[in-house]
Length: 169
Image (cartoon, rainbow, N blue to C red; front, side, top):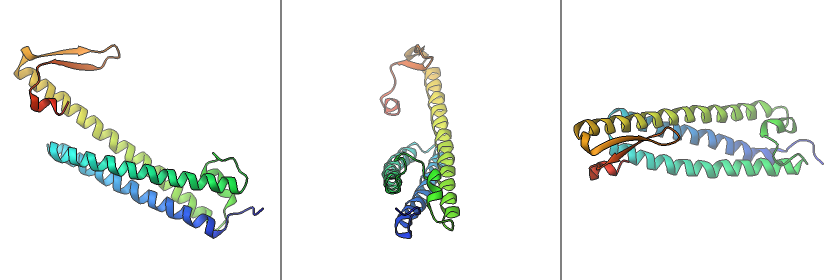
């Protein structure tokens, strides 16, 4: 059995990794746009962008599954554990291709971290915006709202919220 992968075996993997880096970049750009829309107070745009983000994440999930399936197939081919990470399989690749694969793996991981951070920022911004809106409504109509806390410490609002506001809650 061949100890190293051949070009026709690793070339599709390189393409999948490159595509994954590109798609994470696209997702990051969508999250940036959403953050700008949050700051500019454009709720309709935020909702549209949120739909685009969800669609993009679905496509990325499919791409990630394809890459993981390719890595599993390659691991099986050289009689490695099926769940062995790509980074641990690097010694099975020709020496001249390892630096590129390692760089692509590192870039995918960096983009994942960066994108998660941006998504978390957006989540916190949206949560804070909702809190401010709830507080403004409570102040304008104090008899209609009361704050409650769940057993886990989460804040809930009860009362007669205007119909337009209910759509956002």
